[in-house]
Length: 160
Picture 1 (tube, rainbow, N blue to C red):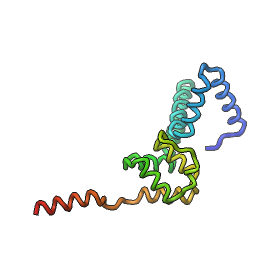
Picture 2 (tube, one colour):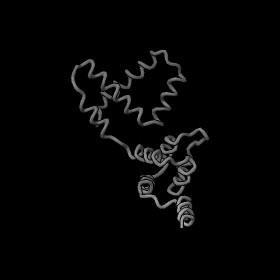
Picture 3 (cartoon, rainbow, N blue to C red):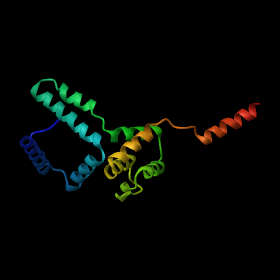
Picture 4 (cartoon, one colour):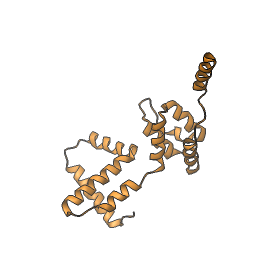
């Protein structure tokens, strides 16, 4: 959904003015800014809050806003969700990412870097093709786990 340039400029000015007039410290504003860049879901939460506010004042439903919120799921979010579902360690994720691109490593990474931040850094540094290949590899069915297969074969051997 595109926004008119005039409306965008006006909204940005009002939001920035509200932040400046608030009692937020520069550290708190910086923390919020960091969260906006590292957590795309925060933008959706902000959209939901604005939609609720609009509904409160105008007393009309905001189905369009809700439909937009639920229908948009970025590939980055899908990959993050799949990595969480698989419960992969950060080290395993970084190794997997290295197989597809090493450009993302130019970003600052520390021991406190979260999984979401790793995915965001990869998405930011990798090419569209590398991102697509990474997502496809992650979505592919996993093979058998050799460790678990060994346990199963030992148990089957012991029960015979």
